[in-house]
Length: 357
Image 1 (cartoon, rainbow, N blue to C red):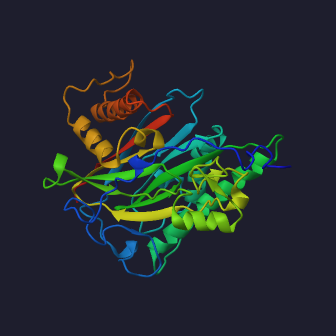
Image 2 (tube, rainbow, N blue to C red):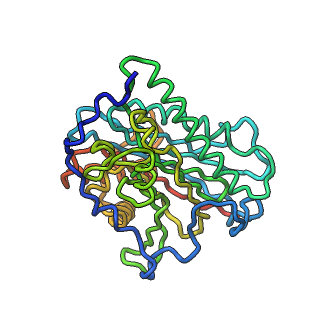
């Protein structure tokens, strides 16, 4: 089976997507950016206090996820998502040092919806089955390793399904997931969907500090381009073979032999009392909003008393927080479309509720 049969000839071109909106992550020169050392890629070098030795701040925070989406001008909705506020029950064996877990994912499909839907239905099962079961000298590194392997296994299983049919599925997707373990977020991502943390800070414009929790993966980045070219791939108009605009993904079997990776970037962040929410979204939102702008807009909408809230369905118990957070997500989707985004838009807001000791 020739997975590459439909790729354009070398002379073909494809319109490139402007990426200026993806360059506005906070920088160290501002007083409202991440303090040095506050956010690092997970590693096994022992430079941070292991998770098992940390004391959750005034009890483990509780997370609640809310989501909205719009198809935009696309023929179909190719995004998918997963919300699991009580992920601890998904584990067959709960480690003694884990008191709270939550899991969330946003998956942005391309060339079809199959990869995104598959991730929404299966990635969390791999995360649960691979989560470290015993004690470790460096639990953070063990969690990172388990997340990387969960992405790898999900990609492998999907590609097996994709190539078992004729014609083979061409679908692929980006992925951004957030896993809360006690009081620490572990964020894993492939591609250009993002996760951003909103932290209250009166010294910052808008009263909040925006902390990036994910890293974009583009063929235009030096290290990504080097890997792709070494594997025999060519980059045209910022895309691999002029077609694929991300350098890491689930699926995309046509490009996996050309350096497209299923290894996620994994970062962690210990939550503090000033943290309000995590905003996760596909690139459809960020075609219309800058990162900082999107978080500040969500924060302002949360406090907007004039925001139209959807009434509960007949027989459903009123839930003011749910109504407000879903309205915020919906408003961001609508505003992205009104600003000219023709892509699918999926927005997830994960509200952080700090518990008393």
